[in-house]
Image (cartoon, rainbow, N blue to C red; front, side, top):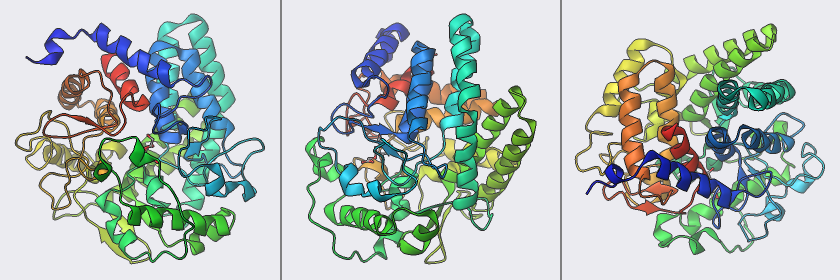
Length: 443
Ligand code: 9YW
């Protein structure tokens, strides 16, 4: 029996709402109940999109909490630590960010960032507020006015500090910054890192998943910690970090989100009379959109990352290759990408449980169906792809992503990621951004 047939949208909505409640720490939402007891930056944006469907004020609180942790440089950190001492590793002390001059007083955060989905979340909050009218609208509009400068500073920081050469691609200094932690995209750059002495560590993530082979291995983890140490040694100072780290990659998917989000923020700027800022943001969007398009491999049609230290393209066959679909732009390029996405190496790969793109193509040698970013399907990403297709008027693809996602999520487990052929939920269950994606798909 097909589970969605018997499951009403109302049941899915209430189960997803419950997951966000379980993860609600008051003014922030933990990314997952046990595995991730803190707030993650891009998770918070998706969570806010979901919350805007159930409570506009609570969605505003989510983004406000995140923004409170913004560094004086403009960077929004990738983890804001809660007071929850359930032992996430690496915690605040291991990060060494207490010594960073730009860390705001009273905040405990990591010292790196994640993709800037936030303006897209803000757009959803404002739209839901306006739809609902009354107090919701007031709260949403007030938050837009109150927070705009923070988001602008964030985009400016990315556009300058992380794109020093103005190539329209954001440079990242850790695989964690991409949000695609152990993706095969980063195998090349990590293979060249020879870590120095890393103090002993006990990982916690492997305690919360059924099978440790679904997670990065310890050798990968040592390199992750080595990079953190390199940044801590220079106190996470922007000017110094670039020369201190052994990982410098232009991340095409991060850059695509930067392009899309800058456009959205430009639209919001115009609505509150910030015309000059709107113009600046539009030109940022154009620069990053062009940067993303410039990476497309003519042989495969997929966008690529660029390893700055090795001076080479990274052409692994991962879902990040569809960055142009997120960035928007040239209609011919987008049409070719949609065809590829629907084709036999991706959504049309034979035997998929749901026609949704796996994080790595099953046709690739790098594909591992159960291992984190090496193959499983990540529901929040499908929401992002759907949002971008809706923006571009591609309703058929939006409908396809929506109905397959609703089927996938009708197991009510809200898995962190899913095995592409069996549809088994993997990693953490009750993952906040998965529940948020369900809420937004339900509408
Ligand atoms: C970690 C919280 C985060 C996501 C990342 C994902 C994973 C694990 O979980 O990271 O320890 O940081 O890769 O994208 O934000 O859901």
